[in-house]
Length: 415
Image (cartoon, rainbow, N blue to C red; front, side, top):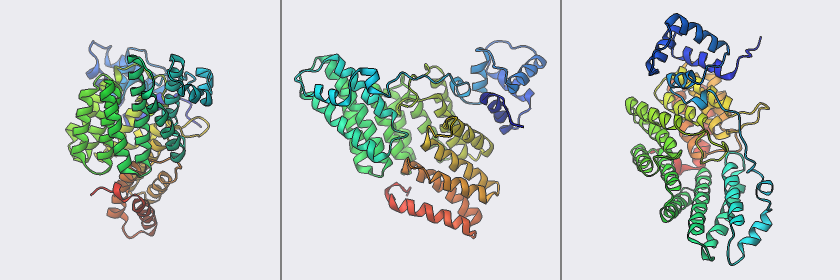
């Protein structure tokens, strides 16, 4: 018989089990996060049972439960999906692409054209998880060129700053896709251009994401101290923006790989507290928006590295659930791939080679990949297989597949 409880109720029970807690243990942890007195243990245990059976906690208890499990309220209890229609430029701006381009050829630029460009930029950044890399790269570069050309037009001071910011967002997007596809040097040049545009426009958020890209590049090439330096510089610049959460996540990943559990957890908790205090984003698809579910993705990576297999596999399941629509379509294919690697690693450690290979191969199958990140995490699965199953032919087949991918992008293999 199927489990018809809400996903959050199943997750509460799974998170508790992953920590080997009784319901009394969970209530004790809940008290530790509460700033005011809670009802008696017996009353709270009855309450906890109701929550695990599917009764929605009150707004008072939701953030406390999230804190107990090291996540944020909107990741554990997602708000209904909100779409503002920006995916369709015509319906949102009243203009088709041809008209926008035509308006860009005028000697001056009106507010309607800038609005259309803003919507177009948002739409492109929202296509990052789905659109084939080659197509997104072509479109991104085309629009970046068009927007950059506006600098030669007659612009007001506010329009000039807006154009600089839009150029910065598009440069960030292009740089990310360049890196995904293996063009490491082009990606770094584009990232530097984005940082320069951010500095000229005095736009802290674009600048913060330029540092986040630097942290990401360093992480996937094994420069973990470089990750920490970039993350801290970006956080200093953009402390009040969502990118600060992702910077904390990247720093936590670096500390995990350096074997510093305490600093890993400090960075994770800093990111969690920042995200908890931020409003729920309006467009979850935009690559430069940190959605609440993404925090579970950071924590999953860290706990896998720390050897916390129950927590890592529980979070991997949540990443896959949040990243897959009801019809089975993947909303976040790149995150899902890394979640499958995590499930492969935990299976390998538990002696289940068949499941480890299935998960590892599924992770390599996706059409939309961030090759550097996928190689980095897959190498961790490869290390477990070499250590435990070196003589098994099925393990060798997976290692050969991974080696072929690595040979195609040798610059991304850690030294």
